[in-house]
Image 1 (cartoon, rainbow, N blue to C red):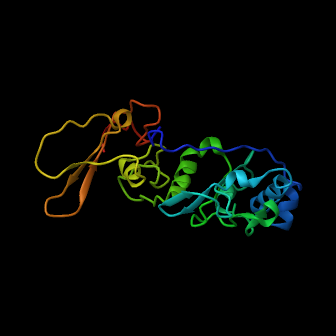
Image 2 (cartoon, one colour; image 1 turned 180 degrees about the vertical axis):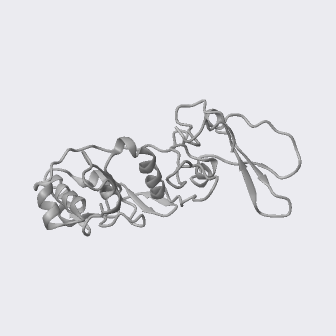
Image 3 (cartoon, rainbow, N blue to C red; image 1 turned 135 degrees about the vertical axis):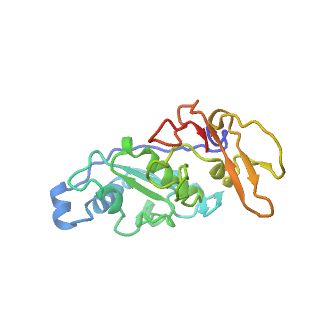
Length: 234
């Protein structure tokens, strides 16, 4: 919806049980249990799944074009439950190296670092939707918007994190154009969530701007600040 129909995500879901017990992975791969069990799950899937279905894009930062590049575009690991270390699925979920599928024709990136652009892992989908969307933003080429007063999917994981994209993020992806104000004038700023209208006001004598969004929370997804009512001018 936020892309105005310009972005469509297509995928498939599979359930895989790791071939070894949790006790085994904790004993043999302490601190990397998720990484190795995920690797084993991929290898099991590779016996029956054609991963060419998921190699449809040639991706680099700010550059995505149709085609194959030998890398699986994206894999989400959604674990059934967390255990002793609640953050294990976030901090230590890297694969233990590239995992090759389709007879070696394609690979799934061995690190969760976002320059790989093709593997995100989270232990608890239901409580991590905002984080999943945040990390997926990196696949589009969006950078962190960390700092006080930054509310967007690329904001830091705190009150400013939202699953609702800011006008800055949408403009960077080419989904909207700024309404730019360069001189003194009067204008009406409608609700951003329902109209997708925002204004960019240039500071006189500079190349800097204020981006103004009016959040009245009229749509389900608009939650610019999870610690308060959140309504008002941002």
